[in-house]
Structure formats: C-alpha cells, structure tokens
Amino acid sequence: MTLAALTNDQRDALQELTNIAMGQAGASLATLLDAFVDLSVPRIRVVEVVELPATLSDLVGKNNLVSAVRQSFQGYLRGEAIIIFGEPGTHALADLMGYEGELAESGQEELLLDVANVLSGACLGGMMEQIRNFTETHGPAELSFSMPSIMVRDVPAAQIIDPQKVQWTHSLLLEVNFTIKDRNFVAHLTMLMPEDGIEKIRGIVDEFIAAF
Image (cartoon, rainbow, N blue to C red):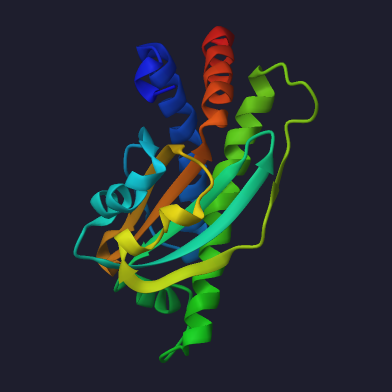
C-alpha cells in the first residue's frame, strides 16, 4: 500500500480533511497566544519508518535545532501526534503568553506541553468531528489520548525518532507548520499513522467524497 495508490480525488479529499482540522488547530493556537498564525498547505506522504529521521529533517530544516512533544492517540484512528518546535522560537512562547523574565527549563517544557496539547487536541478533535458528520461508523467514532510528553530538546530533527524503537514498517505522515513571523516562531504539527491505518483512511476519504 502506498499513497500513490490513492486516486487524485482521494488525495484531494484527504488534504481537504487535513486542512480543515489543521485550521481549527491554528485558530486555537492564535487564541492561546493572542497572535496571528500562518498555516502552510498540508503535506501528505507515506514513508518507510527507516526514512523518518531524514524525512523530518527535510521538513523542518537540516541545520535547525528543535524540541519535540509526542502525544499518542487510539480508538477510531491510532497513531502519534508529534509537535516539533523550531528554535529559537520556543523561547518566544513565554513572552507570547505573558511571562516576564527568563523561565527555568521546567517552565519552558511546561509551555511546550501546553501548546502541543492544544494543537494536537484541536486538530484531531476537528478531524473526528468531520468524520462523524459523513461516515457510517461501526461503533463510536472516538479517540483517546495519552498525556503529552517531551521527546527531545534542542537537537537536530534527525534525532527526534529512532526507527529501531518503532514497531511499524511504513507510516502515513500528515504535516502542517504554524508560524508567527514577527516572533520567529514555528511549530510543525505532524501526525504519524501505521500502515494498517492507510486502508481505513482510504475508506474515510471515499465516504467524504460520496457525501459531497
């Protein structure tokens, strides 16, 4: 199974679903930070897990140091939401959220966790809200989430994921970046789903197409 096997209509539908959900995440971030947030066009691909380090490095910049927060989800869909914060933009969060002075490391990490939780929750919640509107689900179309946790701090993006610790062989990757230009802030919201979820995504986008 590869993403190339999807029809043009299926790819367009998946991008539209992702765009709507990511838009809700961007709106939530803008409200939290009281700032105008720009969103990129969603990027969608299937990659081999062994290629994830290089793929993430290409997405966020090979020479950039990043911090990353993970939050797993399971239920109707399953996978990992990984929010990657570019440096030095992470240090702007305290100022954006009204803190004065330099925050300790623990305080910086708490801000990253809070922002990541808002982004992943709004995006996945928005996606599930759409899915409930047009799919004939078998059982409740619900998700449960783990608590967000810090993966890495101030490392090259290629070090975020160790492929040897991932049980999947392929992953569906959905990515959008959020930027606040005047604050040099960028966050990449990346969703990874295992290969057995690709067929489910195909069914979802087919129902989305049929509904419209």
